[in-house]
Amino acid sequence: MLKKTAIENISQLAAVLMEKGTLLAPVKEVSCHNFAEISDPQKVDLKFYNTLMSPKSAFFPHREDFVKYKVGKPLSEAEHTILNLKPAFLFGVRPCDVKSFEIMDIHFNAAGIIDPYWRARREATTIFGYAYDINQPVDSADFYNTLGIYAADPEGSDIFMVKKDKELLLKSITPKGEKLLAELSALEKASSGDEKYYEDYIKKGKDYKTRFTCVDSEVIAKKIESIFDNTDFWTKMSAACLSCGICTFSCPNCYCFDICDDTLFGKGTRSRVWDACMFTDFTLEASGHNPRTQVYQRLRQKVSHKYSYHVRKYGVISCVGCGRCTRQCPVNIDIYSIIEAALKA
Image 1 (cartoon, rainbow, N blue to C red):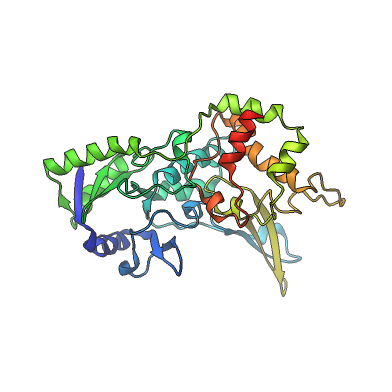
Image 2 (cartoon, rainbow, N blue to C red):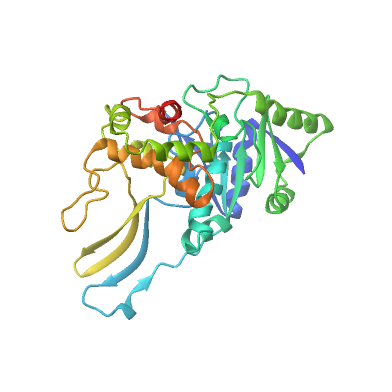
């Protein structure tokens, strides 16, 4: 099913979705766009290249409370957080970010121990994928083509959107998307010309080229393993690193977290909060020993996890080439260049 709406009427579509549940969509901030829960439909803004932060927080919040308790009271009196989720709509997600959800699903939803919080949010959410504008230059940091992802790749979306001049074409990809699209009376029925434009755009998306290097997951996994003890290589790659962690926090595929207990006046909350393998104390043990005191060890861990350990454990590289880590790194460290250098080492 293919429907359409005028770009200027996006707020009307947003209002309809807000009546059905929670709407998360890109909004313009001071110097960037980011996903946010929408309270004013006029705030939805699709005039962006990609958001500063990935939309993974829709399923994996930066902070998530699990248990509330009283200090000194038995565990039986502790109150577990119950998710009473409304239907949610994640609107305007770029194809590389949609792919990241599938990769994260492996860890949270299919690795033997299911994370009920991730799964509940995933099941409650309808994803509106949004093709890149192939008439605009590609960002120099992007390399999603290297990971087999394209600018107009509908795979993984429930509904996929393509911009056509001053209109937005929306096509259902999954049964969930089909059902929702049929209910959206605010949308117009697309013409046969729109159908052709949409299909042609999907094909042209494969010709919209980002940076590319030939990366076979098994080959790069073995290569990373072979240079693991090459201290000179990793020291050179990490020479400028500040261990600030922005690369991991902005990454759609980083999922490290810490469990924290906050207590005040005898009341406590146990929460899950994002953590980062690039932080100095990430591996600090209670004994005081830290097996990764050096910056090169932490950068090696991050790259090895994405391009080797994850491949060995789950069969897929844990990176989608969105370019965020490169764009936001204050010292211009580029994971793509590290992988290129590793293949030549």
